[in-house]
Amino acid sequence: MVAPRRRTSRRAAVPNWPNTTKAPGVPSTVGLGMRNGTISVLVIEDEADIRQLLRTMLEREGFSVTEAMLGRDGVRLFHQKQPNLVILDVGMPDLDGWQVLERIRDMSDVPVLMLTALSTERDKVRGLNAGADDYLTKPFSRVELLARIQAISRRQVQRNEPIVSFEDGAIRVDFSESQVTLDGVPVVLTPTEYRLLATLVRHQGQVLSSDQLIELAWDDPSGLAPSRVKYAVLRLRRKLGWGDQDDGPIETVRGFGYRYRARAR
Ligand code: CA
Image 1 (cartoon, rainbow, N blue to C red):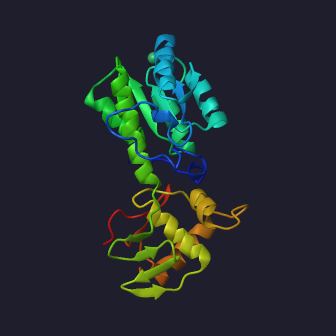
Image 2: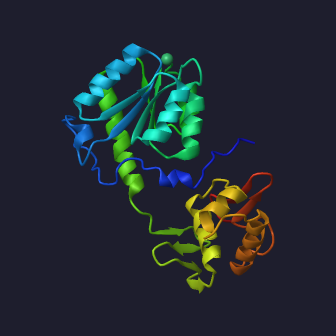
Image 3: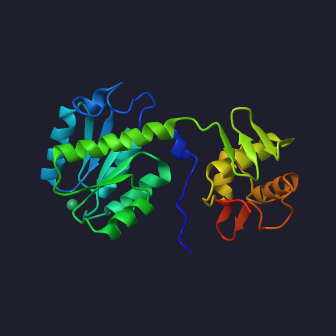
């Protein structure tokens, strides 16, 4: 079994691409980082020449740049600065780029552009599975760098658009009204049950641990035992007519947590 990509509630709290940023216009990239406020970039790269090159290219576009020459410093600076974008080298002496990416992904959905000397398909797949947003293969040109950043920012703007509802044939969850319907009939849920369901469907296909669910769905998560989630899931399944069986839309993933199946039965 492939370990699930971890998610925590803190991810949402870390600011990523500014909401106000519009997708940059096509032909000119001048001032890319200045539109609607300065975009901060954290560059994590052990080679001084490349750090300097990135700084020059990015600052010319109006980005504000912070540099880290080691993976560990990068993680620490990520905490401190909460940048809008991370440019992350794969080959580094202490923590490599994959390890740094994993630590960043534990905290945040911030866009990450991986910098790699390897252009093989395998590395690309590995990085995208690990949660990288895009790739830049060394050596790169200024035009390539800015094109990658533009592509990421466009996707980020789309990602920031609020999702108003979820529907998969089994249920419909209206996030703006906090209402759940089953075949068009409203289902009465407690606020916690609603938030639990909303959290699961928002992360459809991903396994969330009991601790993560407590943090995301309970009003006061302090000191709650993981068994609270178990019983809430049981109640939710019953209210939604999915019985006590585990083959319904809400799946128990033994040893990991719970997942709303990618496709309902
Ligand atoms: Ca390197």
